[in-house]
Length: 361
Image 1 (cartoon, rainbow, N blue to C red):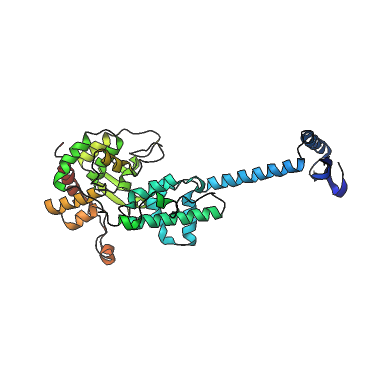
Image 2 (tube, rainbow, N blue to C red; image 1 turned 90 degrees about the vertical axis):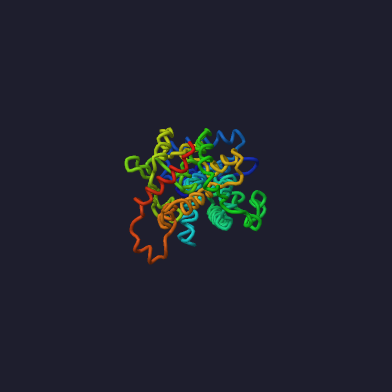
């Protein structure tokens, strides 16, 4: 040890080379601490380990560990929000609707190709342009995360040479008929068929059809959104396509259906997935249709079934029917004067729909 330059120094020789290792300043390290440190370093020398190289290795591991913890602390939605603030604010609704339910709470380093397929497959055939925008935006955000050292390796959202091997080109899916719908006259028999099937996906399908809601709105439903006393389901704006809160009147068959669903203590969702912190996959109801051999149908198509029935078989007005589907009514001027959501009139419409849909049960 040496007190030269007012610091402790360990001088040693290894493999014929003389080296000096700083042990700290006199003000920070006392004599007893310095001797203990020298003893620890000499034990390394006896094992043929260079103390300076070992110190550098430990420092690198600590830096890598800190970097890894930082990478896991930042979620995809955090990265996306920051990217959107800097780049394009118009992205937020699209990512909130399609990407956040699957990867919003994941760290960028945890996002995989399977996650991207879970996001894209439900909309690739029905909304190819939207699906590609979502893919491109996720790719850019993950590229930004990689540039900041928050993930490594290939970007799972990359199209060329990656997802193009797993999904058909958009030019091929544009010709696919969108939202294949069941003729409304066949609906009661179809409802009778799915009521005999076991599984949460079939129950979710029943609720989706009886409320004329979208797939994500139904699967993301939580028990706190249901008011059994008021017989209504309030879907918050952040889960709606138009980012506006939507109240759904619940007819008696819907109330009965909800009351038949067991609650999972550690899950807020009506239709929890394999992990209680997540709802059923977006693909669950579509796969249930496939198990029934109904490759000709899509879940979204039942909204068309509802609209056809309402327009052809009932006296309910167009505005009431469109409001039931959470569609925008009229231009911005008209919307500014329309304060209500026609809830009372929609009660009658949804009662008639549920009565008709369950008439074969």
